[in-house]
Each structure stands twice: as C-alpha cells, then as structure tokens.
Length: 369
Image (cartoon, rainbow, N blue to C red; front, side, top):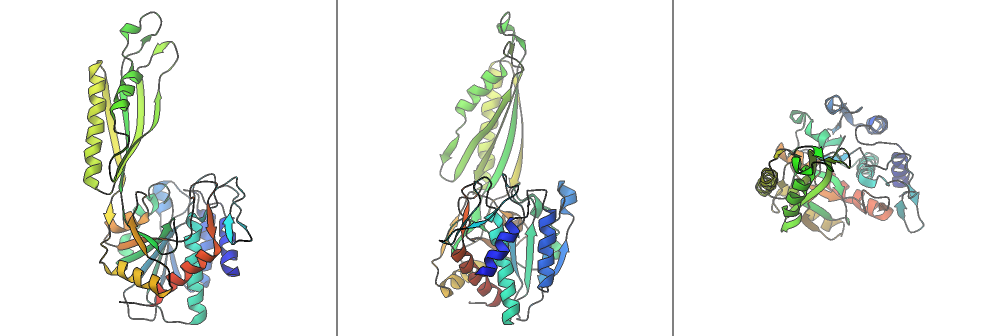
C-alpha cells in the first residue's frame, strides 16, 4: 500500500481549487501517458473561466466487452491551499487541520491510477476503459456539463465520488435549483418619514417566515441561504435580495416548490405595495439508475467477489453522474474512502483505498453476469 500512499500524498500536495486545476491536470496527464493511456484535454476551461479542461483517457482493452467509463474530479473545495496529507499509525489520513484534506476527490483519482498500474504490471486482460477527470465538479458539475459527449462510447459508468464505506453506492441524486428573489420597496428617511417608505426587508422577512424551509416533505429540502439589503440605518430599505436552493429526487417536486416560494414572495411584496422579481437556475437535473440495471448488478457482484457488504441508496448530493445520465450513460457514484468531506475534519483510510482498488480492478477486468 506504500505506492497508494505515495500517489495520494503527492496529488494532495498540488493545489487544485475549482477553476484552478491546471497544475493538477498536467501531473495527472503525465501519469496517465506513462501508463499507456491515450489522453485528450477539452476546452471546458475556456468555456467556464477556468485554467484547465476536462481530461479524457482511453485504453483499448483486450477483452471483447463494452467499454466502461470511470470518473473522478480534479478540483477541491476551500480551504484548500497548501494541503498536506498526514498518515497516522492507524492508517487514517488527515490534513494538518487548517485545510480540507482533498480526499474529495484525490481518493478516487488515486484508486483509478493504482488499478491501472496493477493492470499493466499483471498483464491481465481488461475491457475497453474510458476515463474522465473533470474540472469544477464542486460548482454543480460545471465542467462535466461542457464535455463533448460524442467522444464517449461507454453506456455505463462508475463515478468515484461518494462518502462512506467501500461497497456503498448512490443510484439516484437530486435536481438542485438555485434561486434569487429581489424584493423592491421604496426608500424614505427612517426617522422623519418612515411611513413614506416601503420596507423591502420587512416584506422579505414576512415571506421567509412563510417559506417551508428545511424538509417540507420527505425527499425535498428548501433553504434560504443569504439575505442582503439596505443602505444605512436611517434609510427605509428599498431593496432586499434573498438567495437559496431547493433539492429533490423528483424534478417536478423541485419546480412545484419553486412556484410556491415565488408566490409567497410575490404576495408579501404586493401586500405592502412593493414588487418581487425572481430568477432561478437548475444547477443539475435529477436521475435514477434502476436497481435491476446491468451496471448496478455488476457492482453488486464485484463487491461480493472482494467480500465487502453492498449498500445502494439515493443521495441528496449531486455529482458528475447527474450530467452523465442526461447523455444516456447509466451509472453509480461509488464510495472511495472519503469521510467528513468539505471540512477540515476530512479523512481517508489507507485500507479502504486498497479495498476500492480491488473493487475497481474487478470492474475493469470482468463481466460477472
């Protein structure tokens, strides 16, 4: 497992924030080429304002099986500058405590690289393998949204980007709708003529009090994330901007709750003589991979072969698989030893990384059905 550690710690040390994956992409490309992988970098960076594109790789394979897509993302969340991986005696890997570790998603990339290396060393026959290492995944999968999907031949995928024990996988993920609502009132002097004004913040506050934040029904979440408004303490605020998001495994449910939120703000603004202007964006679209599909059953059999329990479930977090599904690629998002992600308490385990390498190696080389 020393090579896994060496790869993991080396990649962790490369700064790779969303939209700034250039150095990481260059190092990863060198490693892939050294393994005999044909690589190609697209122009997603130019499209999204980043300095690197998505990195595509292909291995022709020697087994007459359909191609398989394996994916992980190159970017990390903040705080992520000058990351350092520390291996404890117990095999737990942490950061120094002042940054995220970056196992999300260096863990997935390390697993793929090690599985490819073992394939080359063992000269074991393997199926055609397509690889995608994406940029700006942490920004609602923005990089994978810009992929030229005509290049990808695989119809099944495993995305290594899930927290949990090895053997866990997500077969469904939500639509995520981000919204911004601006309540417009009327400015006035708060001391001399408050009645001449229309208090935009007060109207927005009444609306927020009516919005069903939290979990209004099972499988749906609604959140108000930011409130901005006002110019000075002695001015009745003329504007108040509210932003938030809605998530659900049902795309229709998301749209239905968006209509409710819009209507509430519109009613409260009009009640005081103001207006509410709303805009939204569906960041990613919900998908569900059937439990009886080949890609799910193959994963289950591979887990059984290496003696790890299988747990397949939905998640309310998005990933690149949301975009893959839109282009006809069925897949699972699989756990690869990431824990407490998006925090400075993030950690991975060396033994779990080894388990995941064994699992991915089976997926690369066999059809168990």
